[in-house]
Image (cartoon, rainbow, N blue to C red; front, side, top):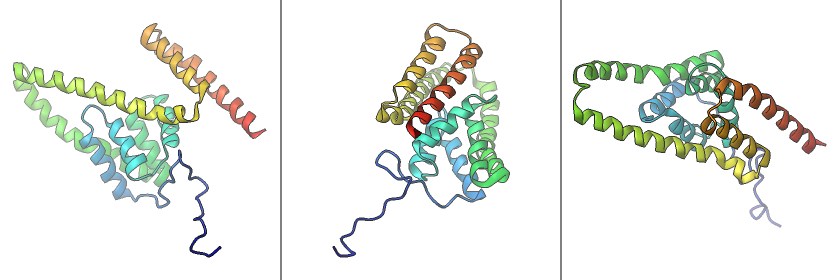
Length: 205
């Protein structure tokens, strides 16, 4: 067999369901600009655009890595996407990277929201503006549902029954039964960690 016909070597982390990540980490300016674009495009929530940029556009993380990082940020105090910017930036460029991503995420929308707040204080009672805001809220819910389904894709592809059952149980407990969030997390976190540990130990064995 000739060299030209030999199959290309596959990256160890690369698989049909796990695309290879970008081997070159972004610089501080690139982190700032990337998260600034996410925040400026993030009408209805930055999470949708953050996942698209990090996983699909720049390939700085795989889908599984993004889900794991977001899960960690979800259980930390504070806004999830802000936690994600700090954890993601620090993971790639240390403390300076976390600050760069954090600044890019918050600085542009803070300036814009300040101006809009001044305008809303004067014209917030206008009926047309209220209808526009109602339409935007519907779009925001649609975007959130879309990103939830995309984050579920790795679990569905692997047919991770335990993860899907835990996810459904947490949804029913909080969304349907309306149990307190803190109580649900106190039970769900150790159960999820324990189940993952046992499954990986079983696979390793």
